[in-house]
Length: 69
Image (cartoon, rainbow, N blue to C red; front, side, top):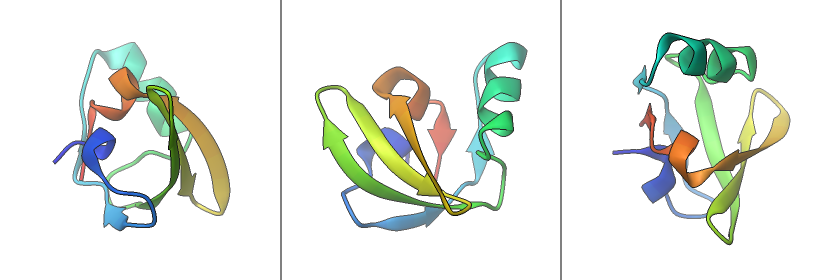
């Protein structure tokens, strides 16, 4: 299931990061790597705030759709 479909407060483990090579590299630099645990903090407008590796990251719905949980 894509990260964009997760509910607030729900933790999940990243199974795959998709998209073009530059997109994957960008997401990996933010900590979105296979095996990392991510928790949705909130959904606002089409964006979401997630907790990953003890950091809060704001991510757009399009990017969140490329991260599979």
